[in-house]
Length: 233
Figure: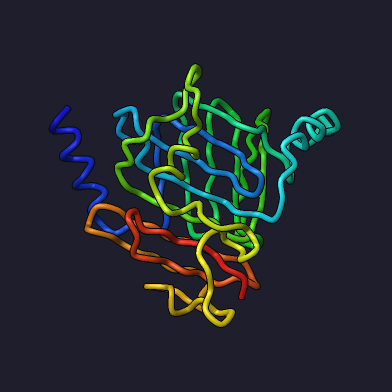
């Protein structure tokens, strides 16, 4: 176990890749204006990768309504996802602006408008898709357990308790923080007004990146763990 932890820390110490493939235990949680994907890649019972898609508004009942009305001949479901999902084993493909979770012939795709993933639709598969204005990716050893049946608190609740990534409202486009003179550029360690993406690395053990849609700018901050968000331009 010690060797595994050392190897995991070594892997996470390198700069965050902007694209790649992961595999492991996955929990997906949908909130009022965001969807979070948590991945435990080294099977140590806590997540070490987090993807977070922000959007204007989400009706948690829309997925159920939409699924009942879907044409069975069209396996692609746009604009609605199951509320919360858990996969004991799944593959996660990501690139700037999108992330795709695949398990047992089902795919869930989250993307920034205009940054959709390359086509994936094998025969008999069901594909859930949702687009928003900001998709961030954070990698670090969180110590927060992946949500499984019987857990009383969500992964997101524990993340918010342990970080400053959930402060503020959604009126600034990213949730959290405040801007200066309407721009907020002075609060960004990387990115800022005019930037559609940025990344930040902290203490050699945690990294984050974000891709934003038109009308928003990317802002990454040197917090613990680092935060990467989209704000209204």
